[in-house]
Structure formats: structure tokens, C-alpha cells
Length: 183
Image (cartoon, helix red, strand yellow):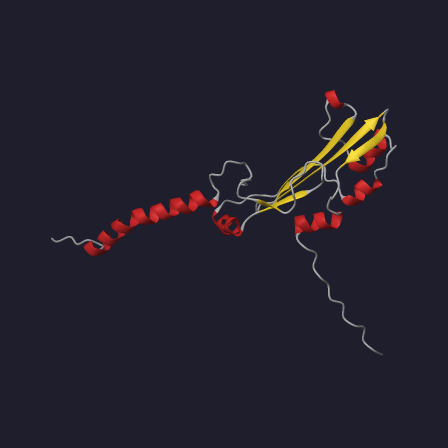
């Protein structure tokens, strides 16, 4: 009785030669795609470019990703959008006036997430939005109190509420209105 192989010798030889090349290509793609990045959110500050100069008290900064990173994001795992801190909009900051009480500030901005016992007369409102695509938006508003009233505040150049919603959900769709029919 004669037993024959299911695959021919030449086909087995070709597969065994190409398997290491295919494995190496997969490893290189995974290594460059961001699966083994150093940060938890997959963003490397050295690879990112800033739309605005990173000044701590100057309001909101957005860090975008390069075209190469956008392409390589296809190979990386799913990353959800992560929002941390208190979002303070331009409209909210316009409501803040010198001389307001702590309760009035808390009503407008919410409870400060970064207040410490060493700076009791200072409330910080940090905010960070890390999109799954790698885009990061940060802002910081600091309110200083003197005798229980607002003495001064720092932070400007903040996004409006409409811009923030567009950043989260994408731009609003344009609705076409048909002209009313003539009677």
C-alpha cells in the first residue's frame, strides 16, 4: 500500500521558506503600530505636533497626530475617548467676575478637582480629553481667592461649548431646508 502526501514537496518548501518572512512582517507592523507604546493612551509627545504653543496658563492646547500615526492607528487596538477633569468653556469663563463668592464659582464651574490644603485660596480646574485617534486637548483654569472672594483668575483661549461638542461628536450635520411650495 502506498501513502501519498496531501501537499506536494515544492509547495511545502515554498511555505516553509516564506513563513519566517511573514512572521517578521507581522512583528514589525505590530511594533510600529503603537501596541507597545510607553504611555497609557498611546501618545508619544516626541511624535506629536502642537497647534498652539504649550503655555500652562494660556488656556487650551490641542496636540494632533501625524499622518503616519493616523495610518498606523489602523493596526492598533481600540482606544476609547477619555475625558478627565472639569470642562470649562469660554461662556462659563465669561460668567466669572472678580468679587464672586466661592459658592458662586462652584455653581458656575463645579467642584474643583485640584484643591489642596497648602493653597486654600486657589482652585484649579484642569481638563484633558484624549481621543481614541491620539488627539489630546488640555486646558487649565485657576481661580485665586482673597478673603473668600475671587481676586483674580487665569486661563483663557478656551473652546466654546459648540466647539467642544463638535470635538467629541464630530461636526454638526448641515440640514437643508426646502423652499415652501407656492400656492
